[in-house]
Length: 547
Figure (cartoon, rainbow, N blue to C red):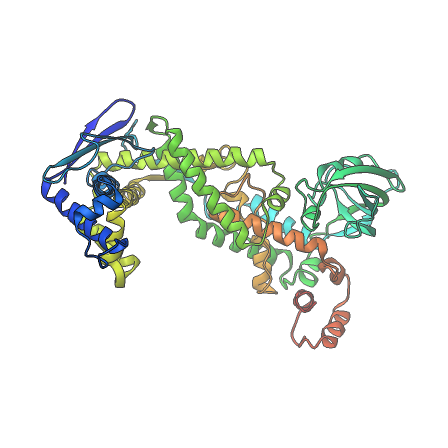
């Protein structure tokens, strides 16, 4: 096989592949043998039918047409690999003759759009800014407040208090479907409800806004719209909800003092020890995140230097890949897409927009790494390719590599390995300075999240270290979407936890927190829990787990 590559306009390449007469004849001979063994020819045993009989029964061009198709389909991907080209569209083929002929060579050409080769505005060392791994006072305050929020209580608000978004109320609810039947799964005589929580579709919350104690409202709600309660219905549809506000509630956080820190949160050293533990946890979490953060910042800084726009076809492929990964993540968490959107407070359109942005960023970063690798003359040898297969599956490395080569997938693997090497070289030589207070990371300037906002579980982790190591709470704050794997997992887990909490009937941590230690020990003993040596926080967690 001989391959020639011609550069055309609009990032297209013309690939011409030639096969000599010997290979054509060998393929024709093999195909006749295959047909003789595959089909039944009257008067001949399997595999013994001569060529004239095969041509007569299957048609004079059956074999040559099959060989022609086989040559094009099998050699095109191999030729693309040899030329180190990666297609981003479907090829158009041309042949010098319609079918192969015995004793003659055969050529075909393929014109295809390939990955573009852009340049960078600069190849100087990358400069990035990263936050300090030390916890700031603001971060500590935020996480301490979150821990206090974990032990909130409710008080009755004044009767004149009108409900607003985010408020709480004790409500009764009657639900009737389009046929006049009561929907018992939605009804309640008394339920504590948080507006804007995503438990019901937005129309229900809108009807509650402005109501005060003793007031009623009736509203028709389409339960097929994204909501956690709608997910639990077999046939969600339009339901008429009649709600009465029995009492508007005020959320009250415990006072931050040594008594609370010792007795409830379980820190013998009081507030000082609590803050110290939180600071340590924040630092630990930042240190764990820093390698990935360094990589993200390097990629975004490199992306800004790209001179060119990523083709839509490439962005579309990356978008599909991100979407598949996202759905795999939420399926593993047992969360539906609608439940995820409801929990995150997103519309499907917002999700799609963010997914497209992520796909474009990833594509442009890959193109920028390609440009850096070309400039630095980074290459990947066949020996390194083989070594990569050996790492993946040492027992079947050779057969796996052959399978990839026959399928024309080596060029894609080689490109990925070049990018990895380029990124490693970039990060080894980049200049890192400290992010100023209040300054955002380059990779999240358009997002609400940054490293300082992603330490939401620090207070809970600090408490776990001191009191209940088994207890974990994730509260990383809202992200726009979770097309990226780790973000999808975290937020899907939050959606799942919220759905479970809404249906729970067991005592809450707040309710148990109101009991005295002696009362908690009595409950623990009745449930067969060994409470020796347990502090109040340990007892509460043990009871919650046992429930």
